[in-house]
Image (cartoon, rainbow, N blue to C red; front, side):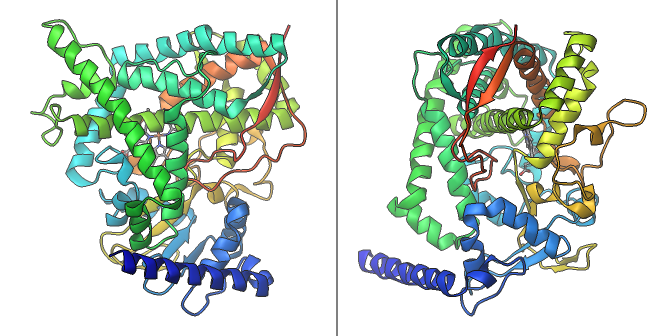
Length: 497
Ligand code: HEM
């Protein structure tokens, strides 16, 4: 066995040396927007060459190829894909011709999430979707989402920012938002407060594990399944990090689930506390036949997906939003004015301009930059492209938000005004154009929760603090399935008196 692995590794090394030589010889054609297909290696060299600026490059490629192009991977590697951001195709695949399956490949690539809602298909997905919908609309769950965000703001984020302002500390805003969202999401989903924003605790394992896993999953899309599975088996490269992440998630969930099970035994006839773990431990299996409340692995899978969906997306959105505000002070001034003149703390809906600015920020920096689909049978897309059953289709939400043919010549500019209608209200855009929260039956279940939390955090910060971005930093997204900044964003804080 070790001989075979050794030979395989040599083979892979040879391929990468070859690819590298290609870079040196053919920089111009590799960097181009019309991808060259090489014998055996397909378009992989061009893709790898552009990894350091992946997101900018993928926008250009879509723009130059009329929003749809077929990517050819190395021969027999199973990595061919159709990339499309054509709104007609999006609407066809995600809404009018919706199929309950994301395709067999998706579940393999996202295996760390097990049987959670993001990876589930068919009847299991239906049961998770309906039960999730009922949880997200439960009065007590809604109340908990407001109370946990309020208390985390007052007890942790405000003292943390006050201290940073007093001591003139440089803080990484991305890290701060990730910790804040991890704590609030964890209270809501598990009933456990990890206190990761507490000033006494320097690092937190869960966040690092999730970040690494999300990067590793990005690279899985470019590799043949056999290669990343082998790397995972022998624990090398970025795949080793995914294994470590899985161990961290399992140990955290085993601790939480066992303590919630003990509470379940002692609570007797009392109502269960409302969080996703206790909800799924008591879920009605006469209604949702495929759910398994007594199975700890099932609870782990379902709640882990919700926890990751809650932490990573919203913290990404907030991070890019505050960076854009630092570059567009006139937008910050307008939001401040709106808060000072038109703010009813019990009704965040009145903050139309803030809402517009958040949408505009997510159009340019969508927290989930990709979506995937595999047709269950062969089909012809509205753009005229033929797709086979189980073939892979990638929708790059990041590129969609920057298409001039979709958003106009000023597509790359940050202009919240484009979201304001003539009567001063919020302008609606079809989800096939603004796909940030997905479209059709698999639309994000946490959209309203996320917007509520983002507005609460934004109002608190914009009213009371000023951030100054430390000069000389390169702000760029890291290739990952969540749009994170590669090196975070360092800022200093001052109080807004
Ligand atoms: C700015 C914040 C958020 C954004 C941009 C966002 C975006 C998305 C996107 C693009 C999807 C589709 C993923 C796919 O099918 O591959 C999705 C699904 C989902 N999101 Fe969100 N999300 C956000 C916040 C949240 C929050 C806070 C929660 C709740 C904890 C949440 C829960 C979910 C769930 C449960 C699904 C799966 C829906 C299904 O497959 O039926 N999201 N979200």
